[in-house]
Image (tube, rainbow, N blue to C red; front, side):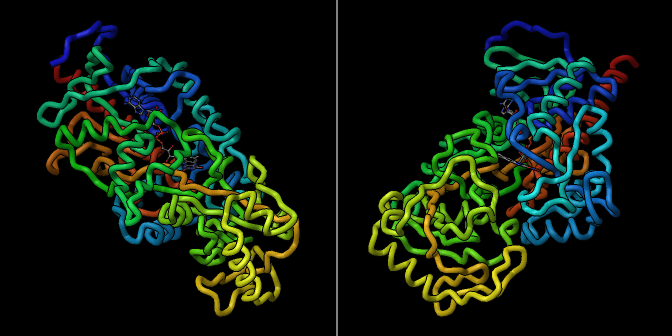
Length: 477
Ligand SMILES: Cc1cc2nc3c(=O)[nH]c(=O)nc-3n(C[C@H](O)[C@H](O)[C@H](O)COP(=O)(O)OP(=O)(O)OC[C@H]3O[C@@H](n4cnc5c(N)ncnc54)[C@H](O)[C@@H]3O)c2cc1C
C-alpha cells in the first residue's frame, strides 16, 4: 500500500480518467445523468485533448442527406466497410452499436458546442461518409471542456493516474502519485500505448536485419498516451483484446517531430509518383487503388524497409493534384541532383526511374478514376496513374512510419463494462482507444476512431452514473 496523500475531494460519483474525446463524452453524459464527476487529464491544459485534438471528422451513418453530409451512408454499407478493413477481426454487435450511435450523436454534440462543416476538397473524398468538425478536433475538445466545466465537471490537469485499485472486479480508487482518489464508479478513457516508445519497441521486436523498427517510428499524436492504465488493468486481471503490434500507421514526412506532428505531416502524393527505399528500389504498387483506401498501408510498408525509411518521388506534372504538405519537398532540376539531395545512391536511383519510365503505358490520365495508365513488365507494377517521371523540377519526400494509435485494449460489451474472467464489472467502464480493438482488430476506415469513442464514451458515462447513483440508493435504503 502506498502512503496516503491528501484527500482533496469528498467521494465523487464518477471518476473519468483521460482528457480526450471518449473521456469528455463520458464526463458530460455522467454529469447530465446527475452524477458528480471528476476528470483527470495527464496533460497540462495547453496540451489537453490527447489524439482527439488532432482529428478532423467522424464517420456517420445516415439514410438520407443530412446538413453537412451528402447522399446516404446506410448501416449495412458502413458495416461492410468495417468488415472489409478489419478482415473480420471485429465484434459485430459492438460495431453495429457504434455505427447506429453515429447516426444520432451529432445533435447531442452540437448541444455541447461542437460545430460541423462540409468536407474540404482534397480531404480523401469523405463528403458522403464523414462529418467534419469546424475548427478541427482542437475546437471540438475545447467546446467539450467548456461545456463540462459549465455543467460542474471538475477537471484536473497534469494528473496522470499511475495505478488503479480493483477489488473483486470492482473499481475502488485511482492513484496520482501519492494521492488516492476514491469514486463510486470509474471510466477509463486514457488512450492507447502508442506514445510509449519502449513498449512499441517490445511489441514490434527486432527484424531480420537486427534493427528495432520502432526506434524509427514517429508518433502522430499526443505524447501522453503511455498505456499506463492498459498495463495496470492487465496486471489487475482484466480481459484484454487485440494484438500489440497492430496500429493505425501512416507514412509521414520524416521531418515531423517525434510527437504531435498531427495531420499536416501527411504526404499525399504517393499515387502520383513512385516510392523507393534507401537502396533506391521500388517496393510496392503505388497505384493499386484510390489513395483514401491505401494511405494507411504505407506506414507498415515503410516500417518493413531497411532503416524504416521510404522516399516518395514526383515530377512537376503532379503539382497541384494533391494537398500540398506543410513542409516543401526537396526540389531538383535533374534526377541525379534529386538523388544526391535525398542521400540516395545515384546509379540505382537513375536505373529505377529509367526502368519505371520505360515500363509506363500511358493512356488517359485521370486521378479521379482507376485509369488505364499502368506499367508493363515491371515488378512491382504500378497499376494506375503511371506516368514517366521526366518533367523537371523533380520533388522528393523522405517518409517514416507515423503511428496514429494502437489497438491493444480492454475487452468490453454493449454496456462498456471492463471484464474480469468474462464477468463484467459493475462499476468500471472503458471507452475510446482503450477499447477500440473490440471493433478494430486491424485496419482502419477514416473517422471511425471518433465514432467508436463518441458511442462508447457516452455509454460508459451513462453506465458509470447509473452504477454510482444505484450505490447511493443502496446506501440510503
Ligand atoms: C493526427 C491524427 C489524426 C486523426 N484524425 C482522426 C479523424 O479525423 N477522425 C477519427 O475518427 N480519428 C482520428 N484520429 C484517431 C483519433 O484521434 C482517436 O481514435 C480518438 O481521438 C481516440 O480518443 P480517446 O479519447 O480514446 O483518446 P485520446 O484523445 O488520445 O485521449 C486520451 C487521453 O488520456 C490522457 N491520458 C493518458 N494516460 C493517462 C493517465 N495515465 N492518466 C490520466 N490521463 C491519461 C491523455 O492525456 C489524453 O487526454 C486521429 C489521430 C491522430 C493522431
